[in-house]
Figure: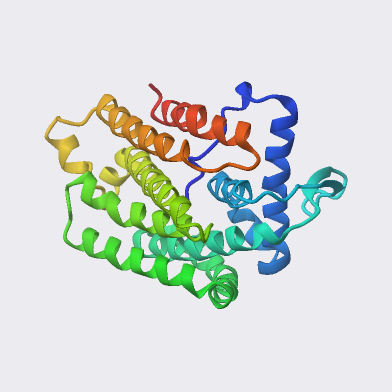
Length: 278
């Protein structure tokens, strides 16, 4: 994913921010342990949110410990003592990272393409491990990529249709976080809304570069016709945030509620305002 699910840090209490960082660092540690040190460089806040949701639905108590950071041995970070809830988010991160890398290799030229080709052996190795551990996650991601490729092949100009594969992919991945059917329906809606949010925001952020490099972007025709505006994008994103919030309110959150409240009610809007510069 793209790192668009970020907290509004100034609105967080210190102890909540420290716990948020502990989950982020724990996910980083799990990725490094299972998929190799290079996987750590692919970590994003999107999967920290996924990991938080994964734990928030369970009543277990989270204990924290302080250890040296692998990437910076002179620095001590907080980690969860039980890392089991990091395993699926780590695998999801590597699977989607691999498909994103393959897409970048297909789209880019010159030095950027060389950079991605050099990263491919490391990411491909991690992807194979993640695929073996969580074949259901891989099946969902593959289906999403196939649908997305078809949309791009047909040069779809509808932002709603173009965002659909990403929305459905995250909906399915979020549903995997619980066996409770009622909670599954809520997670489905949250994942779908967050997926739309990520796709639409990324399309808006990349629009000028995509036009310059003649890459696919569903917003290009709207831009050329003079119908594109940041206000329109903000309106679409606010709808996504609102839908995610409605579904989130129906979840049975056991812990991390203040952190998740920040991400849903403040962080999503704060992030797109900063990214769109509005």
